Amino acid sequence: MHRVLILGAGKIGALISGLLAESGSYSIQLADVDGAAAEAVVRAHGAAHLSAFTLDAGEAKALAAHLKRHPVDAVVSSLPYYCNVAVAEAARKAGLHYFDLTEDVQVTRAVRTIAAGASEAFVPQCGLAPGFISIAAAELITHFDELRAVKLRVGALPQHPNNVLKYSLTWSTEGLINEYGNPCQAISDGRLIEVAPLEGLEEIEIDGTLYEAFNTSGGLGSLAETYGAHCESMNYKTIRYPGHCEQMRLLMNDLKLNHDRGTLKHILENAVPQTLQDVVIVYAAVTGKQDGELREENYVNKIYPQMIAGRLWSAIQVSTAAGITAVVDLVLENPAGYHGCIAQEQFRLTDILANRFGRYYASGGTKHLSGDVVVAGKTGHQRRPKVAAR
Image (cartoon, rainbow, N blue to C red; front, side):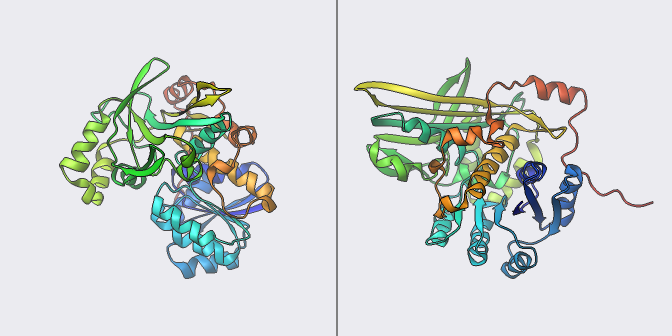
């Protein structure tokens, strides 16, 4: 069995641990600074090969000691982006494979430096964007003789928006603010440039529904470095319902909360609810020459909440956890094929979708499943707190 340490028992870590442990091929350690949170997740899964630990991964000595006492083959970080450099350093020292979900550009650069010359695989940016969207776009790119433009668009949205932001908190609030507040990369006229977040506003229509899209940081991943020299333009934008960008500009720019992110985090988490009834939209468009003709190809998919092991998991949980577990599975099933820092676009879309975990990206789902399960009160429990003895 593959032995994996998962750091972080939050929304995504909870499902990553369950998918791997319940497959029967993995022995999983789920660790969190809040040991009770990890225990609650393990208790809810009830899987034989899943155990909980209390561990502050930010303490280098504590993490090194844990890895020595409880040997593993790989470390998966589902921690906030700013924790990942220390985890990558620990993985390198211990001779382990490393995977993370970071969207942060500077963190990714640091991981690449740490991974230089490593015999093991270091795979940052294994989430949805960056991550799966890069894999989808790279697959389309291989179909063209010449490239002109590459557009990446992703959104995690509530199915039934009813607040002024037309949004629900579906993943890390810190990661969301980071994407909205940091400089973005793009290719323009064949050159790698920086563009401002919350700018480049455009309309996009998918299946008859109108959305807006705008620049956010990190979603392009390493795709610009891999293919940017071969195309005129390449950019990543986040999809939202119309009007969201204007409201976020007010909060982050006009009210200067981009410079007071702690306050913004408190405001959002106090006012914007979470939901299991969401939808993830993945849209990649590539334009270029095929057989001398100018053509465009698209990959468009909507992922809805799904019942896994008898419980309802949100679309963002499913899509993110499915992406990283598929990558982990591909690497650990063929460890000799991966060394040093591995870019997401090095994985084939066909391999991801054929994988036992990547299959959760299969198209054809609808919003009706989550609606029916919620109405029936049968969502199940993603966590089971310990019941105090009487």
